[in-house]
Length: 209
Image (cartoon, rainbow, N blue to C red; front, side, top):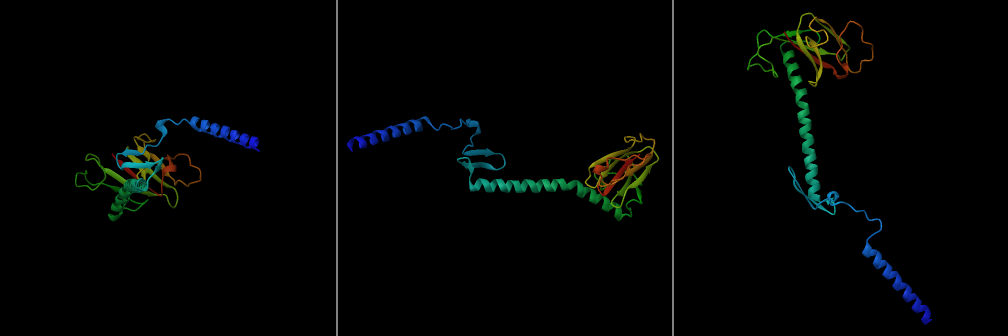
């Protein structure tokens, strides 16, 4: 009985010693993580101030700051991305207020523009021609017969293509075909067709000569 108890005590002592040795040596599969990858307790930022972390996890205050910043930055991005569209809407509304009709009317400035002209970045040495083209109900054709310098923008004020001297007609004139981005038909020969992948239901040709 005493021999069995003594053997048990010796075995327990050996196991305890082995465990102590293993703990002192550290876990076998512990990763050697570089200090540069470990989240510090405090991170200084330009816009949010100090962000606090505990064992790599953000505190409640840090989470609230971060989410508030994300909400604000996305709101600013939404606002700024809408500026070109709002500008185009204002331009087209101004046209319609003076009687310009989409796909039917060409507006020509009677005089050179100056600082009193409520236009977006016009110059003061060029007469302007404006056309509102709406491809919602199908393709639209317009013809350029004189050497102009023109550009086609879509409703988001994104560039679609050039017309005239800077365009495919090289100032010699020609017929331009505008189709919507969902157009599935073929493009007939004899027409210049800008990148219709970028044409929204509304497009504007802004030309000068």
